[in-house]
Length: 390
Image (tube, rainbow, N blue to C red; front, side, top):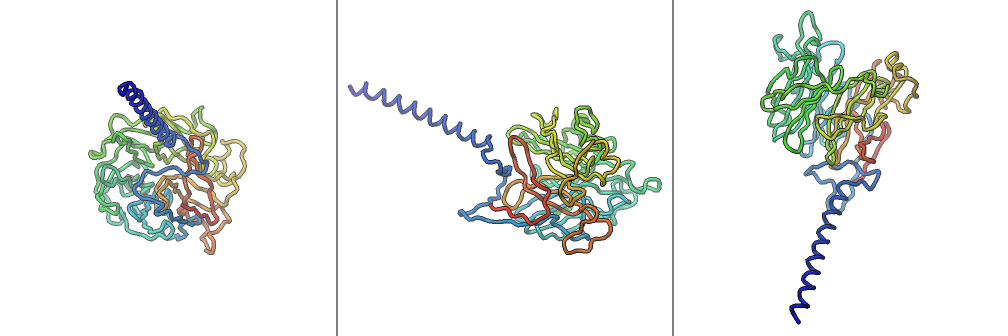
């Protein structure tokens, strides 16, 4: 009697435990894959915790974040290390000749910034140095316990005073974000390339993406500073599959991975300066447009002039900017993902409370990054005070 009463109970318990386990697995997967709140920011896999003991915090900011023209840059890239944020970018002058090097800014609160140092001081480089020209769009990535600095530059000569004939990618590394950085190798590619960025996949393989009359990709061995295989050009501006807002030019790639899908942010200067988004099931493509429209940016007919005509008819965006682009993604004060890029006020607009010079200088702007309906999204650009609660 006891045998027959025991077995059904035991079987019932096993079956119950099995279904409970299935429910837990399914429920966990469901929460990880489905965005239930349209306003939920993209998740940053970070040891920094934004909420402690149930306390609610608030972070307020107003773009452009930096209004100090002495540390003005383009192409801002931010990396959070501990409780500090570090920022680098293309220092001025950008277009008229060699610039002073690779500047590093530091902040304790993401709002107030000061110069930390020069990661590369052009005044200390010899005339024979092969990367002593313009220093465009540097980035710092923490990969495999080291900080990797990509710098895009060339050699200044009498015939080429801007160092553009051999402008290419140079790779440096350091044990600390502030350096000192040592040259690993360069140039990394055989032709003109710019806007280099790095991405480490979950299997440890690192990828290099860059621009140069289109977008390029390759696997890279960081320790050797060498491309694995060939550098592949996978997208140009005027391909027939591209919408016309891309036709002026594309640059500034940055890659994220979410739930097995790779997303590439890029910028185009056709109608102003806008950010587009590609996606792929592989870090080497094929890459398709994730959105047929830019996910962020500004557009002004008069700013780009003839270049803007290729985009066809469009309306100016309702913001005070001429450029908001070349973005990169970083961890914000709430432990979630944010986007940074340079903001330039449109002609006639001034920084609040400042007598800006005739040509407005590019300054740092930041916005929270969201994930909605399978796409990354950036609201804005904003120019009034914003408050994020977390």
